[in-house]
Image 1 (tube, rainbow, N blue to C red):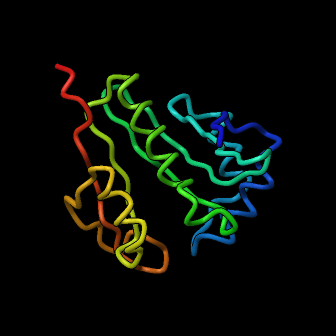
Image 2: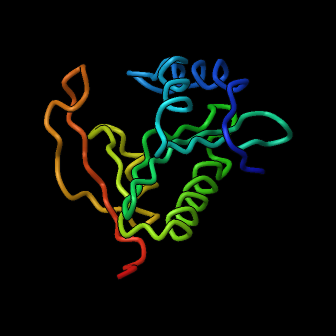
Image 3: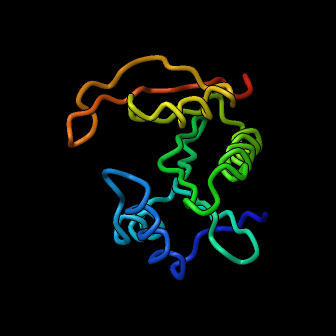
Length: 148
């Protein structure tokens, strides 16, 4: 498995995966806007034998990092792709001297919550009515390094 930066050539594939994986998927133009306009955005692809196995977005905001999206292609689920990506995220947080890592996750998405807990994120609050279908989200956070 390798990790590489997302490129414009990946956008169609990623938008298709988003639609397969999430109730409220990001569009191809959402990803393009992130690549074009967001100086804090970092988007990566996990590949297995040249095929997109997963992807994630990470905003590096000074001393904080936020996972914006993370997904594993159904074909590659339960093959440790998500763990591989979470390890990469942890490493990026350390390299960028982030103090905190955060994300929002649907209250109903127990498998994702369990993954994030495995990597040290804790539920710190509920964001009521977070998604357009009115489902709440958990805000999950972890301290990364204590770089003071």
